[in-house]
Image (cartoon, rainbow, N blue to C red):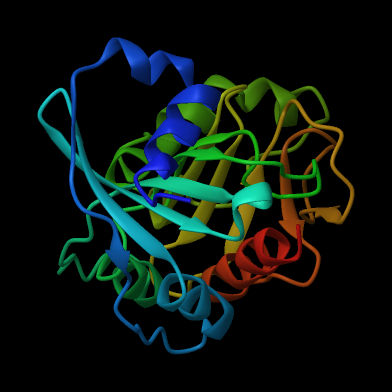
Length: 222
């Protein structure tokens, strides 16, 4: 299979990309990477085929894995050096390897945490205003005689879903919580001091590094 076909597979599943002008580079093996505390994610990148592609002048990379009959991949922003000390160390480490995931292609089960996310670990996700979002839903807590138990300014968005759900990471500790007023997910626990359909923790993924590892492991096992 010609590796450039990863572009064809991507645009066949993400048809909106066909409306954009595209310049496709030569596919090459990804360089080995090291992500402390995130060996599964590092292994995925180290074994990927990477195809540079420019959509309407914006640089991206297609990362792909698997045989021709079961090819899967991600469309990613370019890696960048994030020197912002006000974001978790794990996020800075990941961004040195990838600018984050904005699309995917191939067969994936609905157990993948990032399935419905349009921005995972991207600069755009981090630009989502946590204080504004939680403030707009303050009534969820007020109706139960509660107050939002976290300081929104202490968190940065690391993933955004089409329905408005956000995954948040504490800027200093990396603790991860999920703001999900619209979900049917299992494997999550309501954050203490919160009603249902508000803030949750992910079972088995208390911080950003472990959350990244679970997402990578789910993808690898699909």
